[in-house]
Length: 102
Image 1: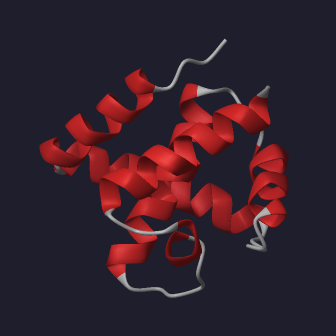
Image 2: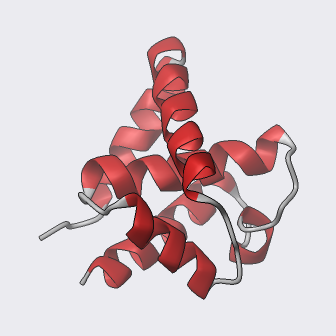
């Protein structure tokens, strides 16, 4: 079930950002790639109650290897950005509401 939720978030974040899954899950550190990745991680951890380990595993299933510490940093960084950017907050909320989490 959580894999399905992860896939739904991944699809919606890609759609919203205009990136393909391959682009989103690249090691590129440009903001246009990192923000959507951070959003994906945030959504998985905060809106679906996935554990850090589960997020790492789902990302690895897509060929994106990332340590636990980077997951935690990404979530923290994105939470901070949400307090500063109301547009980002609205977009994130829309994606969170579009994916049904059971």
